[in-house]
Length: 178
View (cartoon, rainbow, N blue to C red):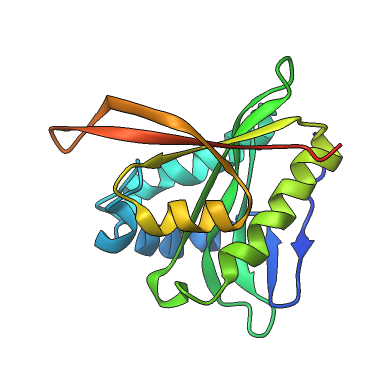
């Protein structure tokens, strides 16, 4: 990975490095019941959310991932976050993650942002495979991944505990176009 953090742009959005000023927006997202319903992490205070901000910075510092703040090109408004983590240079793969503030759902942003992240992963980092782990109940995310031509590889049944209950995860992947 490059030592400089790249901004990525599309017609409507800019993906940029997280800043300390994003703390409140990340807290709003990762404490929102509609977002955390199918997301593996949640926070109940701004102070606790600093852990997530450190995680974003550590990914880049340790070269194990890269996450971007997704912002409106029109007015700079924070829309959500997306990126790569668990990068394995040996196996040339990473896990993709993504969340949007609920007021931005259904506007085609995932279809606009994900290709930017995938292109960066395949072209700049040299990855071969991107994996997505989606809670089986998260139908909207699974539809979006299918639209982006991710392949469903199977379901890991009762593989994690969330809120005291077992959950299953569907595994999706996308390979570099050759």
